[in-house]
Length: 182
Image 1 (cartoon, one colour):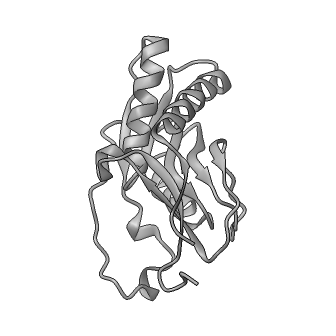
Image 2 (cartoon, rainbow, N blue to C red):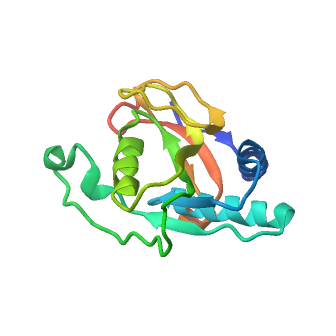
Image 3 (tube, rainbow, N blue to C red):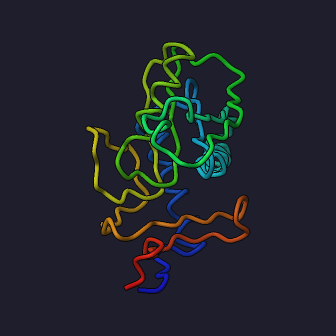
């Protein structure tokens, strides 16, 4: 199986617009909302969401950057060296509605690690999760509050999200896992 593009640049743009509206609608106000992008591709997605919300609500939404690497439960089992990047959340999370933003929700383990990292920063009013793609195969009881697209996939496939800010193109594709090209 070759790469199959399942979301184009236009699809991603429409999806970000829809999720932006859903966030405002669910929370009834933007006053206490903070968007926190999970490294790596959650960061540009959070910035895009904030920009969209600002365009129709005329209120700037704070955006933070979260590196949850030290909270992962698979640190010791990885053969690759752990690279810690900075977390940049220069405002209090206490009493705020935190919307964690990630590109793909898969097992739920990254979301769990991000929850732990946020809780270490303070006591938010609530924490919500927004993802561009939910591919299923959960290992933990975690679900997203805002989902761009549900893409059921095989464990022999990967969902590849590419964004202009990190990859010079906007697209989401299904690709075979390396070594499983059939």
